[in-house]
Length: 333
Image (cartoon, one colour):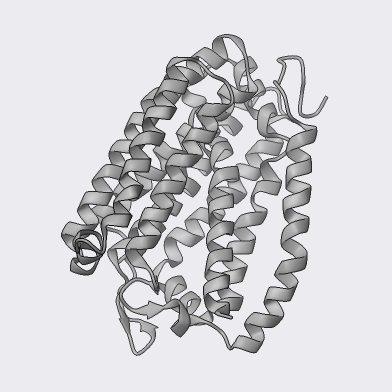
């Protein structure tokens, strides 16, 4: 069995699960400036109150799995991305504190609203910057990071950061469509439509820029006829985009969120195809970065036990708190 490949798939699933679940509550915070009333903001926060902290389980699983399973990749990526990683963690911590304290204050609620917005924005922007830094390449010499302290900071990584912010805002808006009613839901429809156009534009730009910048990616995507099967991904992206825009225009309630996840999934697969089999693009493959097979086997046994439990309690939580959030329901009632 190819344990390194199996673990690469498991970590990819964990990362996507984090984006799918924690993305909407990060995005919801970034929509706060468009919802001025405390009543609307209370409903928005109550819609994620039962699930927001559990969503971050997948981030821990992805980061911890990378350290345990691909220690070489971890030892290269962490020095290259120290600053955005630290910024992300501080943003997540600040967001969590703001989430709890907002419901305990009367006079300073606006300050905690601002803290909630900024913490979520920093976390989302940092995640996008890390993605952009990885896609543009990391300088490696003798299996160690050889770049500078600010190599991660380029116009492309910042662009990817903005793209992730827009994408999370889309997930947040479609989550509100799913969980709310009335004027709040109608505004969420409008914001989701604009965010969808913005995200698709960003995905299209990155998809064109990477082959232009990297000859290896260009060869993978444009070496006909071997690459013909890859062109199903842009076609699927077009279908998902049309499906999302039609669902928003028809004001469907549940499907916009699923279509939005479809956009993320297609982009995720496209970028994975572009850099495979590298964990550190053009420097370290997943087999070079992997721990010994006996370690991977031992960890896989643990994952086989824990992952179904995590999926089960996550699914149960969402099932228990399904349905619309009413304005008279409160997080600390």
